[in-house]
Image 1 (cartoon, rainbow, N blue to C red):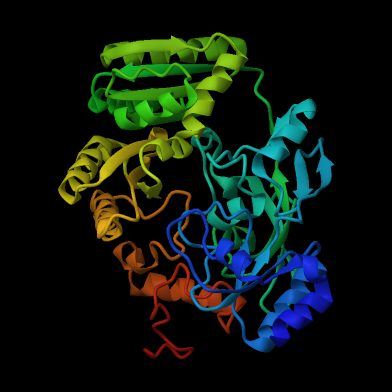
Image 2: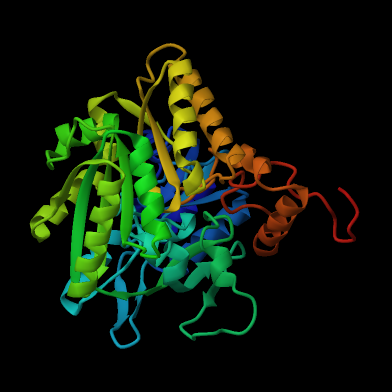
Length: 467
């Protein structure tokens, strides 16, 4: 194939994968969708990315950016035969400014590796998705990833100051700046969360946070999910915003405890994992407040970690939740919706009912503080008709969240998975506006085509007439 020959001439045979086994490996991400791959290439510089883009455009081959492949919405999966541009070799920390608390990093840098490398400087990168041991900064930028500790600090968009981007024309541009108030359009915020549809991020200027001087982690068990949710609402209503407020239901707790053995109580309906950071006195005061609220909402047990090792073990349990599900079934389908905190119990009840009606096993883990649900269906894809039942149940879960005043995604992105559900949240004019932004960056729609926006999103021509 001429394109592959030209890519090999550009990058060498080791950085161009096109063997059928390689194509099978790169045909899917961590979700359930797979797609046709022409080749997967591994550039190491922005110039190489730009050259790969120009070759793909010349041959009319769609381009799909990819990081570690931990995405769950099919964002890194081609719909038509496409070229995967994999940025995992672009994993350097280029520059750290301790005074300004910023760093220029490569998009292939593993999320946790950034914070680990900054530990001796007393700094960290705040977004901490559960996949942070594997997911890349570029992937976090693409989906505007969140994480347990984004309750107080905000999701990825709040921690990205600028990005170097290769456009569909093969140009290398920078959006954003380290300036506190850059004039003009905020293209940085447009690129963050764009899921590779506007270009390929080749370098990122991240905001760094100072490590808190003190922290306390609480594990609280409840006999009912209603009591756990009420505790979350009262904590937020108190005006105190903890660093994290995470909930898991009993099926998920049982899976996590068998997997990690972190000491989670398995005789309760739900657990709440709360973390408080700050100075010694403020941490003590907020911890006492949370304990008091939990007691008043019938907490069955309260455990405060006694040291950093115990805190780390409790968080290992939470962040191993999705891996722990492998004990239940060989496959899982994970959703990501957001509902108002006041509707949390109501929507969870609907989710359990949907799972029971479709005959699928449900486990739930969620960022309770901001209402970000992660209902998870454990199943065996080899069972006839099972996948269809899972997809039907998942579709109903999304619709229940939207009807409760929620939205499609908190951090996983839209990708292929929720693309056709976008009209549930956005009207015709909204979708048209989003399509116009995409066309301004990529009029040929060669960058990750078929993602995020449903077909027909562009409703009007330049004169305002309906297309």
